[in-house]
Structures are given as C-alpha cells and as structure tokens.
Amino acid sequence: MRTALVLLLALALAAIPGSTFPQRSISTVDVAGYFDEHPDLAPWLDRLWAFDVYTSPWFSAIYLLLMISLAGCIVPRLGVHWKALRAKVPDAPKRMSILPYHRVLDVDANQGRARAVLKQRRWRTAVTEHEDGTFVIAAEKGYLRETGNLLFHTSIIFVLAGVAVGSLMSWYGNRILSEDKSYCNNLQQYDEYGLGAWVDETSLPRFCVTLDAFDAEFTDGGPTAYDAAVTYETAGETGKYDLQVNHPLNIDGTNVFLIGHGYTAVVTYTDRYGQTQTLHQEFLAMDAALNSEGAFKFPDANVDPETGTVDANAEVGFDAILVPTFDDSTAMLLGTDPELNNPVLALTAYTGDLGLGDGEPESVYSVNEEQIASGALTRLNEEVEVIGVGDAMTLPDGTTLTFDGVEQYAVLQVRHDPGGPVVLAGAVLLLLGLLPGLAVRRRRYWIRWNPDGTVETAGLNRNDFDGLDEECDELTAAIAPDYEPPGTHTDKSGSEQ
Image (cartoon, rainbow, N blue to C red; front, top):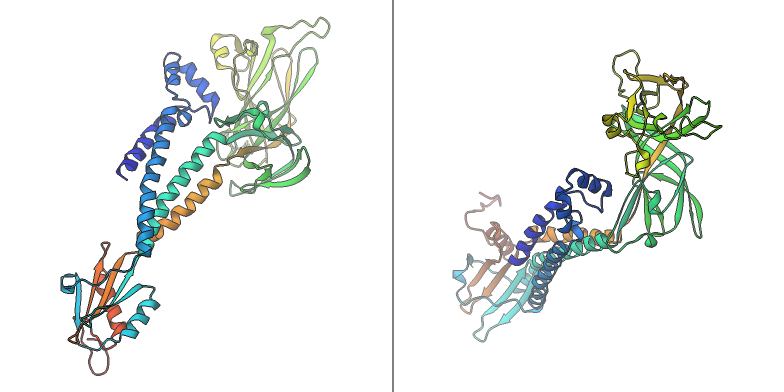
C-alpha cells in the first residue's frame, strides 16, 4: 500500500506537464502555436513527450506500476478476507475482565433469547460448550468494512484501466455546422480533433450529418434550451433525430453531442468589376451575450474578367464583430441580449496581400495580424463602421460589402470513448465500497455462562470508534431485559433516572 501511495503521488506529479503544456490529443493548433513562440525550447520538450504526456513511455510506466502495485495489494487481502469470512468466530478469552467492555450480570440471561437477538441483528455467531460446563456465545460483526475497502481499491484499478483504454482507443472531433449544411465523419472536415494512440482515420465509422434546423431559447439573457433537427446517413441507414443537450445521437457506437451555438453572418462583396462573392462565415462568441468575432476574406477579389489578371495587392479582408442585439440609443457597441433582435456588423476593412498564398495556417476568424503589422495590408477606414441587415459598407474604391443576414449554427462534438463504461463501472464500485468502508465498524461480543452460575459479557472493538460500550449495553439489555446499564436507575414507575 505504501508503494501504491508513492506511485499515486508520482502519477499526480507526472500529470503536471500535461496541464502545463498544450497536448496534441487536445489541440494540435495550440501545439503548433507553442512551437512558433518557443522555436528553441519546443523541439527539446517534444523529445521528452511534453506535448504527448499521457501516451509517453514514462507516464505509461508509472501508470502500469500503479496498477500492478494495487493488484499486489488487493489479491493477498482478498484471500485473507475470504478465510476470515469462513472462519469460526473466536471463543471468549479465559479472562474476559481484561477486555475494554466487561460486565458481570446479576440478572438471568436466557441462552436461546441471546442467540435469537444476535441473529436478528445480523451478528455472526458461534456456540461453544466446554467440558467444565462453561457455555459461550461468540458474535462478530462488521466484515462489510473490509469488503468495502477491497471494493474501493478494486474500483481504482477499474478507473485506471478505463482511462488507459480511453487514452489509447478514443477519439473526438469538433465541428461548427450551419443550418442546411452537411459534413461527413473524416478528419479533414473537423475544425478540431484528437485521436488515441491506437486510432487512425481508417478506424472512424462512415456517416454524414446535415443540420436541417436549429432553435435556441433564451430567458433573462441566457440560453435555456438548444434544439437541433438533423438528418444522418450511414452505409445502411438514413434517419432524422432531434439533437438536444445531453441527448446525443448514437451512430455505430459513436455519439454526436450538441455542445454549443452561435451565429453565421452572410455577406456579399461586390468588387470594382461588378462581380459578387457571397460568404457564409461562422463567428466565435466572445461572451455570454454572443457578441461574436469573425472575418471576411476575399483573396479572389478584383480579378479582371477580360484578362484574368490577378492583383495580389488588391485582396480585401474585413475584421468584424457581430452584435446580435444592438442598442443604438446608447454609446455601447456590444449588446447584452444573445437573441437576434437587431443584429449589426462592426467592420474594419483592409486591402493588400492577405498572406493566404504562403501555405502557413492561420485563423479564419481574423485578418492576419502579421500582414497588418508588416504593412502588407492597409486599413481603409479609421473608425469602425456599423451596418445592419440590408445595409452596405462602401470602400474608397467603390466596392461594397452588403450585410445579407444572420443564420444560426450548432457546435457538434463527435466522440467515441470505449473506456467510458469502464470508468463509470469503477466510479460506481468506488461509491459502493466507500460507504461501508467509512460507516461500518468491526467488533466482537461474547456472552459466557460460567459453571458457578454467573454470566459475563464483553466486547472488543476492532476499529476505533466511541460507541462500543453503548452498543454492548444495548445488546445486553435486549438479551437480559432486567439488566440495567451502569449509571442508570429505574424507579418503580419504569422511568429512567
């Protein structure tokens, strides 16, 4: 047990890097960002598995040693406990007066009544008749305590095994899905994903999901219900499902969860040649009121339709904030209501080189800040311009961006975790073992009828608790109705003084 405690502490210490450094299993984007910020340190940390802590050899070694140590602790105790359950309750000691609780009765105690009372109260009993005429009833109770302790430690193995299975074989993917849009279950279509060590893309089940409609209910400025009507298609089945929070869609053992909600802004850009491009751009919420940030990028803007000439410095981008409920009676831009009552876009326009052709990954929710800082992008409006649905922002070259409307999107998480049921079973066993382990006390109780006619009772506490004397006095009083515990006196009316 001492070894298991040391290993448990080592496991907790080994998990610290997992919460300090970004993990590839959670966000590859964050790991890439760490490499950009610390180009010299990150490669060395990567050699030590700092970005894959929970699948690293050193973390796995501690994990396995802890499981082996727990098993080595539990298995011998199981054998001892099983023998104790089958063993006969020990006889009373020759000198019962040495025990913590000892009484010599001056009243009659019926042997048959004693056995009946103990059996009724679920004591294990053993009767011994000695050659000298001594008659002993030995009773014991509280074995459920050790059973609970063993169950508790066994549950830890279940939890460890479940977490290990989940780490190796689970996977997840997050996807923002707008209304009337579809996606299929492959890594290229997820905004973010994580795979277990034993999982690759070929392991993913094949299915597609379409968001037919989404409805969000709000009360007092907060969401109260999300409801997404979806259509799903698999190799052998097509169906519809009403997806709600905590009511996932299960497809081939994979759960599709509804975990969030947001807005998609629809805009149309008209370039200097009269050509139009329409974007449906999802925005990320910045606060509980769903004031959201996003960007519109038009790298193919202002292409001469006759010559096909592309001016790389004529690309157009907009940083934007979407306010669901704009209150134009105040000086505040951001709203306090997440419902779509008066949506507006607050726009900042840029022109030049968006930097999309260099192959470097970048956020789709903002214009490249490095391009702005380097001067490759020029800001076109000094003050943020606010437009409502149906309005347009006109740029100095005569091109326009029209705010066509707002759609809703759902944030879906697709997750497969075969270790989840094992962890759940371990958690249930842990609670079942913890309760008797804390509440039950193991103790023994003896009644001896001596050849000289005296009757003795004694109790022994196998665990520290303060109620042994009171419990033994209660048992003795139930066995011998005329017995009065020390410190009490009963008057003729029967009331206790």
